[in-house]
Length: 255
Ligand code: BT5
Image 1 (cartoon, rainbow, N blue to C red):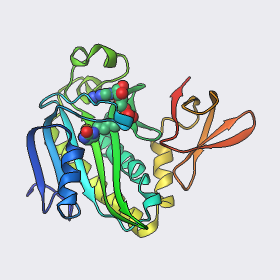
Image 2 (cartoon, rainbow, N blue to C red):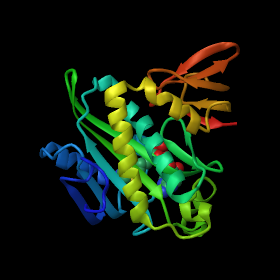
Image 3 (cartoon, rainbow, N blue to C red):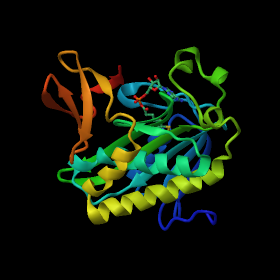
Image 4 (cartoon, rainbow, N blue to C red):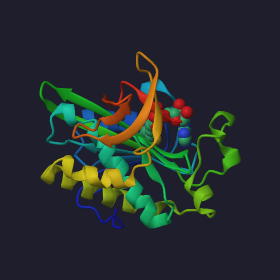
């Protein structure tokens, strides 16, 4: 805590665990019990790490940053999913500055290096009527996992910072920078709105300018990812028309 340069994130409450099913589950539990904004949950490993739509997240002991952050943002619940975009910007910047690994954001919730996933983000929300009670941003970062340590089904699609940098990466300085960057982006968004953040997102994106397959749409389609809009939707040009792709409904795959 003394080593954090943040004002709120990780300052009042840090829940540090050896093992847990999912740091997001623990963070939601603590949020329901009334923890402060900025509380963080960290675990050395997760035995039930989760991705979106009940996919699982590989989280071996001591080799990653398995982190969840509780926020109580003054946004409309409609804007909560944009926390994923904000976190992707913050984490990408932090990784680039601490490790020099030139990773980039794949819309909406992945950070990739040379096409392989290094980070996944899972934002979950609890809201009543028009107000957010809390948002939990779950961030999973593969830090020191060798390529052979990934289960077979992930070996071709996942990688880690130590593989990308070709050396072990100490976790603490990276965690400190991630929390600082997250706090900075969060306050920027509160003060100036999401639209202000989008230029940074565009700069760090590896999705824009690519031909992508849209998966989960009623008709299978593909097109050129041209931009992100004020709602955080991906704009894809399909046969001369611009389609708005909303996170959660569909995912994309580069051609
Ligand atoms: C995600 O889901 O990418 C969100 C992952 C969020 C993980 C963090 S860890 C801390 C917090 N606590 C949790 O329980 N979760 C969060 P999605 O876009 O649905 O991608 C999931 C897919 O990524 C899986 O189906 C696998 O194909 C792949 N995958 C699983 N583990 C991986 C890993 N360690 N590295 C790269 N890819 C992985």
